[in-house]
Length: 380
Image (tube, rainbow, N blue to C red; front, side, top):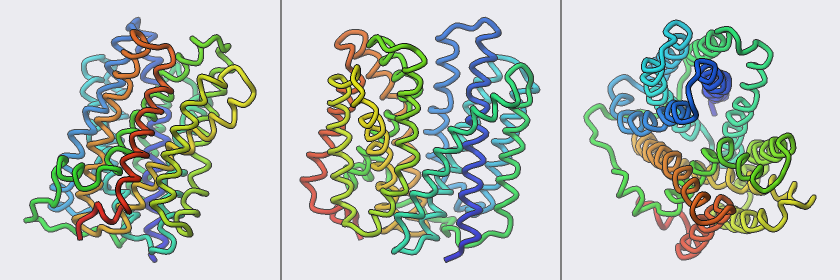
C-alpha cells in the first residue's frame, strides 16, 4: 500500500473542494451585486454540470495519452487558472465559459482521483479508504464557505486563495506512483448505455445521489421554508443533512470492510426510502433532527458503496473507464434532479422533494433485491 500516494491524491481532491467551496458562493454574491437575477445566477450554477458531461467523455482518452498523474496535475493547474481568471475578467459571458471549462477539467480530476485511490487500496481496507476520501471532500466543501467568511466577499481574495489551493494540490502529486495505467490505443470498455445495463443498481444510485446533492443546497432550504420553518432553523436543518452525509461515511466504510457489501447497499437504499417518507410527517417535530442526519448519511452511503463496488472489481483502464461513466451519470443527475423536483414542487405537491427521493430510493431497493450481488452485474 502506497500511503504517501494515497494521502497525496486525497489532499489534491480536498484542495478542489476547498476552492469550490469558496469560489461558488463568491460568484453568486458577485453576480447579485452586479444586479443579475436568479435566472442568470442559476444559469451560471448549471454550467459546471454541462462541463461534467464533457469532462467525463474525454477523461479516459486524455489519460491514456498523457498518463494519469500528468493529466491530473495538468487539470488542477487549468482549474486554478480558471478560478484566477474570474478575478481578472469580471464579465458575465466570460464567466459562463470559465465555469463550463472548470467543470470539465475538474471532472477529470475527480475521475482520475477516484480511480487512483481505488487502484491503490488494498481489499481489506477498501471501504475505509474510499470513505475517508469521500469524508475529506465533503468536509472540504463545508470548510470552503467558512474560509470565505474569513477572507470576505468584497474583494477577490477568495478567488486567488482558491487558485492557490489547487496549485498546491498539483504540487503534492509530483513523484507519486501507483496510478492506473491506460493503453493509448484502447477504445474503452464501456459506453454509458452498456454500463447502465450491466451495473443498473450502481448507475441508479449515482444518479440518485447526484440529484440529492444538487438539491440539498438549492431546493431543500426552500422546501423547509415553505413548510413554515424559520430561516435560521431551516439552515441548521440543511447543515444536519450535510453533516450526516460527511461524518457518517467513515462508519459506512468500516462496515463495508466487515459486512457483505450488497446487504449494506440494500440497507442504505431502504434507509433513504424510509427517511425520505418520514420528512413530511416529522418536519415540525424534534424527531426530524435524527431523520435529517440519516437522510444525508444513507444517500452518501449509496455513493460511497458504489465507488467501493466498482473498485473491488476493476483495475487500470477499466477502472478509469467505469469512473468516467459514473461522472457522466453524476452530471445527468445534477441536471435532471433539480429540474424534476422544481417542476413537481410547483405543479404537483409541496412535498415533492422528499417524495421523489423516496420513489427513487424505493425503486433502487426493488432493483437491488432482484439482483443477487453486485458482482453478478459486473462482467469478468
